[in-house]
Image 1 (cartoon, one colour):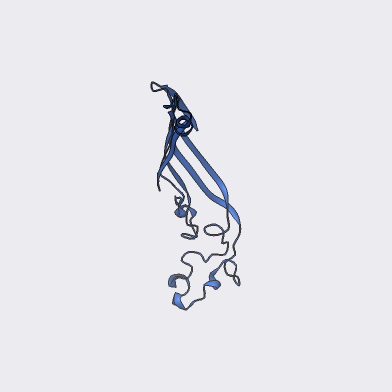
Image 2 (image 1 turned 135 degrees about the horizontal axis):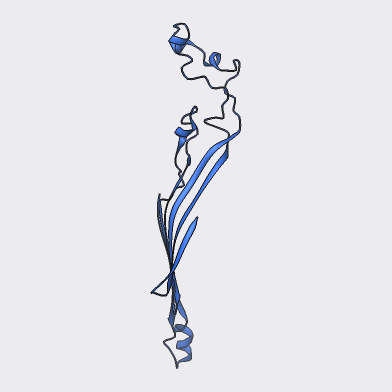
Length: 171
């Protein structure tokens, strides 16, 4: 990760950052690499079993450990990564406070561990929680004290603040 910050002419601060991480050896108990008793690819083909129709065969007879079906084994083979460009602009001067930020990122990892039980790399893709673009804006404006001489007016009108939050995201 790294960030570059710069003061702007509009009494603000602009920051641009790269944020990234990689996770390895994440726990899994299903999908590729977890079943240690899979029927080998092509084991039941007619050319490898004496010409017998594969539809009439029992798959359990072709497993590395006959007599057992699937044997799940907890492993640590999953992986994921995240990369993003993040930009922030903050202005706090006078009666105005503005904070805006934008993120353009991508979250990748193991998405469907059952898709290909023989090759984990085929199960890698964009995570369902990925949010490609995120924009946030928070703002606050002090409305001031326009009433000066009326005590009731000062109590009702003066000292108000207008604020809000806006959020947009895509995924």
